[in-house]
Image (cartoon, rainbow over all chains, first blue to last red):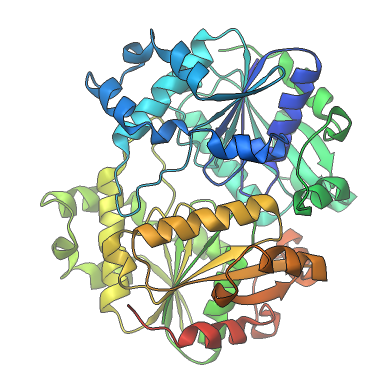
Length: 255
Length: 255
């Protein structure tokens, strides 16, 4: 099961991604949780230890390795033999969960990150295509880390959408980007649904066959995100409807 | 007055940016509203006409122009003479407001946008450094469109932060990035403050001298964002405290 979660910042994609990861882990399924959004923190949402998270080196910061791997052009093939080592060295384990941080682009003043992106795409492609474990990607709305190569390895992309006009407009933009790189399967997931009119607002403007679920607004999730104590998930904290969503998308394989 | 607004997706930076733009427009000050975040919609927040917004061509889509301008390397100088025309052709006017959309990177499958970024940075630098009008930039947390060159032209960066751990972590990451490119002045603006403990949570972890204001949670803003009718701002819809924030940052000039 290889799932990419995208959507507008603040829509709840990290919360949904963390819920899916925790659901899989609760089934004792080994799962890679890939934090691919510089503007998110999947580790926090998974309730991983703050100190351990701080010491987890993002892949993007491996400048020497990036240069070395890209001497040959940074293609998928270059990394194939070494990718296992890379993953072992740059993952944070908690039970069945293995967290990988792609990391933010941290080169203020530079406008060109081609080699870094090439490296990240190579790792991602390897992870997605070659590993037996489940993979859950928490991605920005730009889905920058997906190329046609990586997209092939994704089973489904879930686009989280709040019942707001800005949220809807971003969700449709993500659908457009995903189509351009031939993501095999895409579903929308409504989130923070407070009223029937919220539900209607989304159902009226999204293709019905592509709506995988509607998640009600959860004061509990909000409170946890606001609490200084921690945003950790436990199985009983899962967003309602996650299992139904996974069942709905489970049928679809790669194109 | 040249202001860049950043922060975590969903924190409310587009709402703050729109409020600042409307406040300036209400003072009859000509202002460029620059939508530099692919994952936002400043035009919607400003209440501009949907049809007009849809027909506004984002700068990023000017591929031919990009190629032409970058033949010489896409430096600031290349664009200097023509930038005025570019702005006239790709702005949407409403009273004193002129909206420019940088646009999303819409090249699914490609990992390299150097020329596009070089072009956008050239335009931005010209706008920021050469124009007499006020400029309000709505930027992603990655502040990708800022280089050391453009940063020089910014008076202040406002980092909008919700009282959540993820919001705080993104805000501090933006501060780090801004420091790397020598943004002259940076302030944090707390948003969606519901309780005194929300206020405390932020004040305990942000440098006091860099907190420009605390904006209370507004059901009104939320309702408008959710309404299918429109997210338009009117002067009486301004986020509370915007004028105080502008007064506080007004003192700081460029370093």
